[in-house]
Length: 124
Image (cartoon, helix red, strand yellow):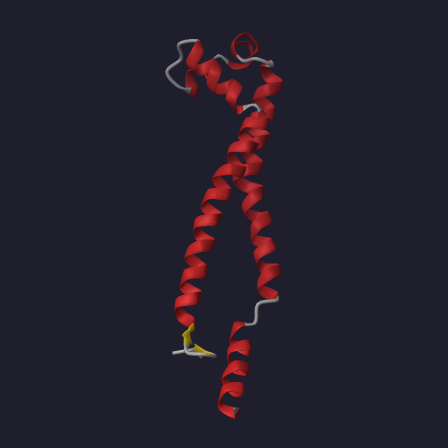
């Protein structure tokens, strides 16, 4: 059991931090993906499906370019922008965050810091 100065049990602190970080990551990822999809025009595609009596995306997609031009505000350009937004949100964003995490972990020295703390405690 890792006890850091004044009898604080460190395992509980680590567990609480990990739990908090997971909750923040979940909420922020939902927010970021929602913003990306809204900005890229996915809302226009959803409106085209709902407002024109289609039961799902495949019915609209089956009409091809003519269907996009007729039913989607902004036409084919909006569909391409929405697909680019979906591609970025689900393929590139996780890669970007992975690289950020790897960089941050390079500066994270938990074992070394715990050993230093334990050495200081025993030397006192």
